[in-house]
Each structure stands twice: as C-alpha cells, then as structure tokens.
Image 1 (cartoon, rainbow, N blue to C red):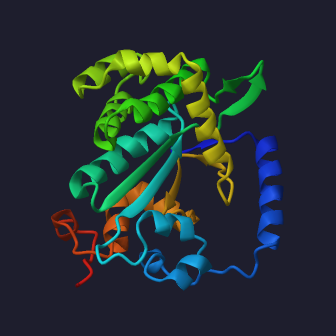
Image 2: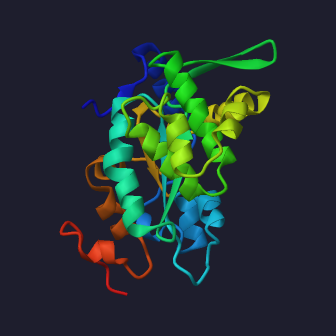
Length: 258
C-alpha cells in the first residue's frame, strides 16, 4: 500500500523555498538533545523549540509527561489509513492515554479558498475526502472525550469506505451521529475545518506529504520513518515514566530503567 500522499511538485517547490527562508533566520536555534528530554528542562525546551508543547504537558510536573504524537492526514490517503490502522491505533490501545497523547489533524494536502464568507475546500482525493475530513473534524468536536472520537475515527479509517461508514461507526461507540452531521453541514463545521487547515499550514518545517507525523511537536525524517515502521518502540523509548507492560513485551524495545 502507498505510504505517502505527496503535495503536487509546483506547490512543494514553493514550500521548500519558504522553508529555506525560515531556516536561514533560525540558524542559531539548534537542538542537540534527544526527544526524550525535550520537556525535562525549560532551557532544553526553548532550544528545541517545543516550549508551547511542553507547557501543555505541565513542564516540571513530577508526573511523567505523555509522549505527544500528532498526525496530519487526509481521510482517503492510503498511507494515512495504513498508519492509523497498523501503528497509531494499536500503539494507543496498548499504552493508553497516560503514556501516549494523540492529536489528529484531518486536512492533509487539501487547499481552501474563502468564497462568500465560507471556506471552500479542494482535496487531493476528491470531494469524498473533503467530506471525510470534515466528518472526522466534527467527531473530534462532538465526542465527549478523545477515546470516543478516536475509536470512531479508527472504525471509519479501517473500513472499506470511511465516509459511508461514519454513521455506523459513531453508533458503535455511542456517539450521536445527528450532532456530527449537523456540525458537518453548518458554519461551525466549516470553521473547524478551517482551523485544521491553519494548524497544518503552520507546520515548521512545512509538511511535504501525508501522513506527516510529529513527536512532541517536532518532525524529522528519522521520527517519520520510526513512527511508520514501529511506533510502539518510538513511544516506549521516548516516554520518561515507568514503562508500561506493552514496552517490556515488545521485542524491539530495550526498556529504560527507572
């Protein structure tokens, strides 16, 4: 199955040029620390440009902070669906919310234009993908907690057709689909998807394909490769607390002693 859904080459060239400009103004901001210690000290967090992410997890708290994995994706991208089904969801199930904090941003390689005070979206895999993106954005908004939202979204992405399975998947996890549908067809849903677009477009470095994965707010080729091949190992190696049982039973992991 295709691992990535790439941005068209002309758009990518513009993004790369913009990225080079940004990098040239930030040469002094170098991070030489491994991801596992980024939030252990304010100075390290600043050097690695993850201060906001660390503040979110209460920097300096005695309790170990969960590992933050953010997925920037689009609902019909084959590689995105594969990552959710084979890496992200199974890892989250094994270690739980206390160890792994998942952020889902359904937008990916889409484009948006403001027409008559409404955002109009164009998606890489067509109109059905745009619908799937907004459905999953509204599920994240309507669900009473992340567990309900992620269970529903995983159900959709693991099905033959994410959009037509939305109603059944919501019902399976006691999520009111009428509320989700109302959100999708309202100005609220339009605004929420625009917010997903802004979060995606604010990535630094800019995303070049989907799925685009960050670890504690940071993206590198090494993080991307490790996450797509063995996310559980990446999470276990990064987590600073007592390793959960899933880490000790994973043959690819050498658990950290605490």
